Length: 229
Image 1 (cartoon, rainbow, N blue to C red):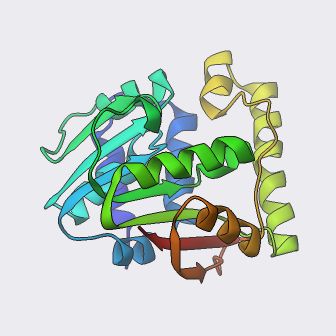
Image 2 (tube, helix red, strand yellow; image 1 turned 90 degrees about the vertical axis):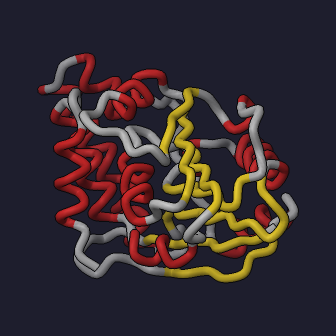
């Protein structure tokens, strides 16, 4: 599937992307196997895009799944404002600043966690996965995409790249740019598949399938966990 037209359409829809936000959006589309993710999401119902950032994937899913109600949630006020500041907002999408335990609504048919869990400590990850389990309908799906730590070379290269880019930005970028790219003090936390599966199952999830789908054109070790309640 060719996503270049969808990416260009989504990019042009934003009113206030600065250059580093546009770079992050472009990179996320490049490194994410969206065709595989689409296969795993239902064609109707309610989807929670947890840790949605600027909302790029939320808008993509709204285009590809017009019968799905999409809620994008992110703790960053700036990112939610950027996600909201568009020329044309689809009727099947909305955004909220916060975390999953801030949500009063539940009964989602699907939840996506795309390159989010590495930001959490193991305790925070367990809490988040348990909250996801509470807020999803029986038979609902959780789609978690992250990096496969077991692919040692790809993993080490992938975690080194953003550190190098952030260092370059700190030399030549403005303070606003540095904040957008990320001012996190915590080190990224990734797991080997057997570790991730163990955590998911301890939170009640049934791991139906695991898709180890590293990119061929970039050194990035994608892995997707497809889970059901």
